Amino acid sequence: MLKKRAIKWAALPTAASLMLLLSGCTPQEFQRGLLPGETGVTNHTERIVGLWTTSWIVLWIVGGIAWALMFWAIIVYRRRKGDTGLPQQLRYNNPIETMFTVVPLVITIGFFAFTARDMAAIGEPVANPDVEIQVIGKQWSWDFNYVDGNVYDSGVQSDFAGEEGAEAKLPTLYLPVNKSVKIDLNARDVIHSFWVIDFLYKKDMFPGRTNTMYVTPQVEGTYQGKCAELCGEYHSLMLFNVKVVSQAEYDAHLADLAAAGNVGQLDETYDRNQNLPGDNPEIRG
Ligand SMILES: [Cu+2]
Image (cartoon, rainbow, N blue to C red; front, top):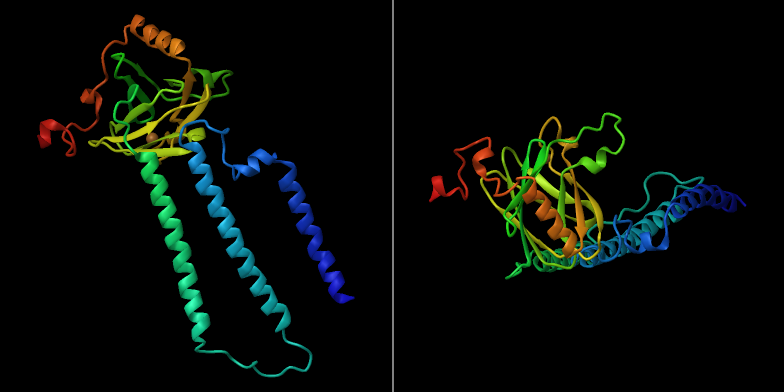
């Protein structure tokens, strides 16, 4: 009787929280492990979703076994009426200790191997990318160089002081759909991080060094981007958009930039520090 009541009490909050959790999410969202974005936003997103959800499945199984063993021990070996002193103590159980060492080791090596495999695949350089872009982070906005088109766009930090439609005015990087893109990442002052949320990928930008990422956007749309490295007072205003558009719209945008006089490339002239080591040829050669 007492047991039944205990189960009832435990079932209530569990059911309530499960209902809350499930009601807010669609099956598709669950299949993506609650990651943002849709299926196939870039050529890498499904691989990332796969690694993420498989990891969670493994972790839930490990968690389930650990919790089951824990509650079994708590319930079965609880102190009963009339018990005195300490129960019989267990020590030097070699099979159990070997298992506790080997199983986590196998799991950790497994996570490492699959992560390394996917990181290598995502970072694999594309020999002849269709589009080359340079993105430069700066406190607190972004410069975009369209290398092939020899045009640029220079952003300023966002101002969300209650103004309607402010998001549309954010600096916006255009990318053509289904084209392989090489993005060189640099910084003018401190470390920033280039993060397009729905691309499920971010990469740091260092002053004096060039990081590169390769991506093929596959779904047209407007995506939100942020700086993902705390870079100073207005880090939170370092926002941008990425518009994945058709080749024609992309060409039209580059033509608009040229017509607006944004011809050429924004170089390190605007970097705050001019004496950095790294890949600055004037210092390192
Ligand atoms: Cu930043």
